[in-house]
Image (cartoon, rainbow, N blue to C red; front, side, top):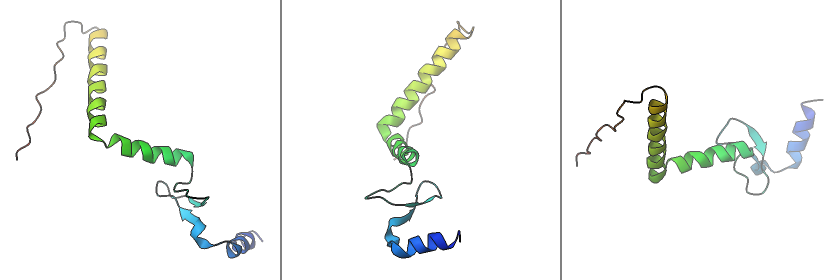
Length: 92
């Protein structure tokens, strides 16, 4: 009986509304233009594409460096000099 119910429901609906989430292996019933199965998967995909932008990568590097400097100066390493390593030059 359990297997007959989904089979009966699938028979009545068109199959283009049943999708697989590109973010996780969940199979879901699409409503309107829905691309992901849940809000969490939508947010995860949006954050990933946002973090791939070059200006965001630079901002994240700066924040990480500031956190490192704050941790080194506050953790009993007051006389520590914190500098950045020289950046590698790309050869063209």
